[in-house]
Length: 86
Image 1 (cartoon, rainbow, N blue to C red):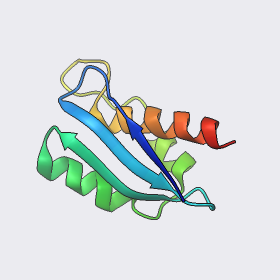
Image 2: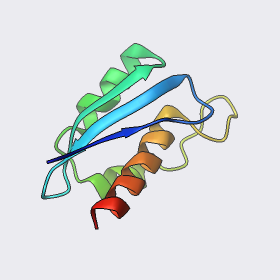
Image 3: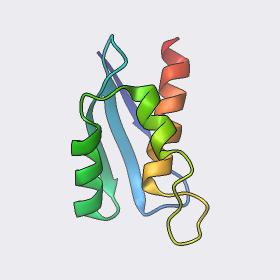
């Protein structure tokens, strides 16, 4: 299992950390900062799910007209992690 940290841009969250196992499943998704209840829920919803599928689902989600969101930033982080792992 590989661990990743990502610094999100233009959102309230300051850090996203997660693991991707050998089967490309997401684990231990944690956000530092942001809306605690919503971000804890995202972590629970994506636990054990296929990383690429989750990235595709969350990509482009907008928060308050920022052009991104914590969920979108997670999608970007996962995409980058998958590229590094390839």
